[in-house]
Every structure is written in structure tokens, then in C-alpha cells.
Length: 182
Image (cartoon, rainbow, N blue to C red; front, top):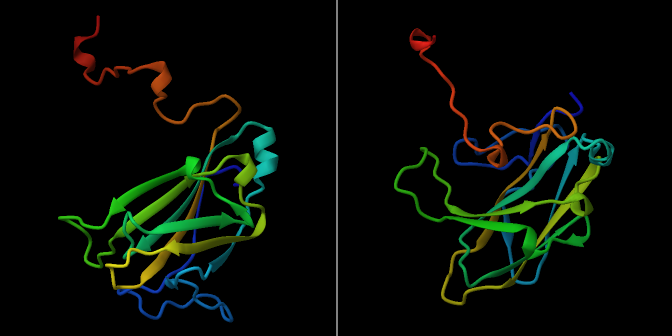
């Protein structure tokens, strides 16, 4: 199981589960309000030894995601992971502020997704994501809220393997109707 795909998430109180119970003595960290120039630290633990599997060429992708509510394109956020700033070059933002169709317990916001390279990989054990709101759109009144933190790790079956249909190999056709074979 060590080199199998993993999905870690920090529990959050939701409309559906307003009193989510986690381990005894563990305090809920999310949702967390982001106030101007006041860093919010979210701690979580992982069991993967990424440097070990990175040396064997088995790590395919490491994604760190944070969903932030009530933010705009004019706001500025800074992210630090285990004390190191996460550069914008690793970031993809997805605007999900409005959807026509959504589950019953709708949550709208921006996803901030970082594709982490080895220099930013999480460490086995305790990890900390720090988010700071450094600039706020003055025309928006609701508080900015960090609602979700997720870490997803994908592995390869072995060095130089692919995951699913590899775009560099081009499309392939799969015959499904065997009645026309010669």
C-alpha cells in the first residue's frame, strides 16, 4: 500500500455535518476565516515517504488543493507549505463561484491547486499549510474563508510506466465488436 494513490483531507465542518466528530482531542481547523495580513496555519499528517518513492521514479503527481470562499480576482493570497513559499508557477486557480447545477450542500469558491515538485513535497508525518490574505477587494464585505485543504498523491506502477491513456502515445482504438473480425 505504500506506493498506492492516496487522498488526504483536513476535516471541515459543513452544512450537512455541522458537528463532525474527529479523533478525541483533535480540534476542527476548518473552516477558518482569513483576516488581512494574519496567517492561518492548517496542520495535517501524511504517511507517504515521497523521497523514497521519488528515488525509484514512482511518484507521478502531488497536488495540494485549497478551496477559499468569498474571494475575488482582486484579492491577493500567499501560500506557504512547511515554511516555504509556494510560487505562482505551480498554481492553477479554478473559479467555482457560481454553478447552475450543484449538490444539495453547495459550496462555491475558488480552488487554488498547486502541482508540487520534489522541492515542495510534503514530508512523512506533520505538515503545515499557511495561507495569508495580503490584499482584499474593498468592495466585498463577506469574510474570506479557507474551507477545504486536500492533498492527493498519484504513483506509477513502476519507473517509466504511464497512467491511463498517455497523450504522447496518441489515440488508440479498441475493437468492441468481435463479429466483424477475420
